Image 1 (cartoon, chains in turn orange, red):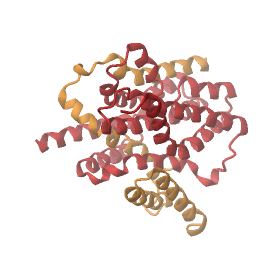
Image 2 (cartoon, helix red, strand yellow):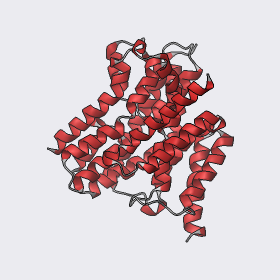
Image 3 (spheres, rainbow over the protein chains, first blue to last red):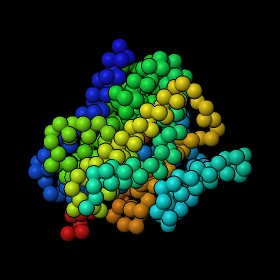
Length: 105
Length: 228
C-alpha cells in the first residue's frame, strides 16, 4: 500500500517536471507570461528560505534574536560580495555554529 | 561554441558547490525515514521514484503521524508543483529536443539543477546543445542524492543533530538568489514571496510553497505593467 502511494506520488512529481517541458509548447504561452517567468527564481526560492529561517521545527515563529537570523544575514552579505556559493554556505554554517556553541550557549 | 562534453562538465562544475548542502540533507532524509520505522528499501525507493528532497521527508512524516495516504500523496504533489514553473522557464531552451528526450530530461529537473542551468542558459543563448548543461547539473544532483540518502539509511544519522545541518538548505537557496538583490524589482518579488510563505505557512497540505510564488509572480506581473 505504501509502495503504491510512493509510486503515485512519484508519477505526480514527474508530471510536474515534465508537463511544461514536454506537453506545452512555447507558442501556447503569451508574451506577458514569458516576461513574468524571468522572476521565477526570486518568486519561488524565498518560500523555501523564509520558513527555514523564521519558523522552527515545531511550526512556531523564532525569536527576533535567533542565531539563524544572524547567520543568514552574514551569509547574504558574504554571498552578495563574493558571488561564491561555497563561501556563502560555509560562512552561514560556521557563523551559525559560532552563535549556537559559543555566544548563545 | 562549446562541445556537448564541455557543456556537460560545465553543468557538473556549476552545481557542485550545492553538494555542501544537498549531501548532508540527503543523509538526514535517509536517516529520518528509517528512524520513523519505515523499511530501508521503501525509504531508498523514494529517492529514485520521487527524487524530491523535502517532499520525501514530508511524505514519511505524514504517514507515520497517521495521515491518510491520500493526504501524503497530495502533499507531495503540491510541494512539487513548483516544478511546473521551472519547466515553463526551461521549455524555451529545450523546445528543439525530441519528445522522447524531453521525457527523459524532465526527470532530473530539480531545484538546484533548474537554478544553475536556467542561469547558464540565459547567459549563453547562442549555444546549441544547451541541454547538456542541464544533464550535467541534474545527473550530478541525482547521483549525490542517491549516495547521500543511501548512506543515511545504512549508517543512520551519523551527522550529529546538534550541528543543525538542515540550516544548509536555506543557505543554498540564499546563494542562488543573492545576486538578484541588486535589482529592486527582484527584491520586492522576493519579499512578497517570503512574507507570504510565513503568512500561509499553516495552509493545508503545505500549499504555502505554491501559494506564495503565485502571489509573488502576480506582483512581478504588476511591476512589469508599471514599468511600461
